[in-house]
Image (cartoon, rainbow, N blue to C red; front, top):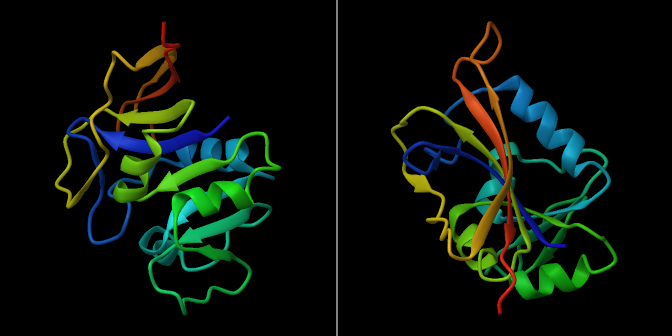
Length: 163
């Protein structure tokens, strides 16, 4: 099951200047727990935003640069090659960025999203979710608190079965 995992603002914002726009510790904890011991597939810019492999996960970086090297990571030049490398994982995760999300939306089985209930100034956006293709299966609302500045919801979508 190919899963896209992302945090998205009301206006589909996901980043600015190659960085996250918000800090939600509860979402970061959930991301870590969800992706632990899985393959995480990302574009080069996403990898460079944290600049090291995330512990206890297999990092696969997609880049057009044939000489790109990232110690501790696997480097490929297409999403299909990344998924081929991750085929032994029952649930590889696509973790960004925008172009990789756009490609992955065509083939993913599941969306594991955090909707951050705020409009953000951004330069990177998540693609539109077509509700004719995706069915919402769960939603958990979380109120802002002392650690998490914004209200947010954990939302899961599953690809609808074609008739």
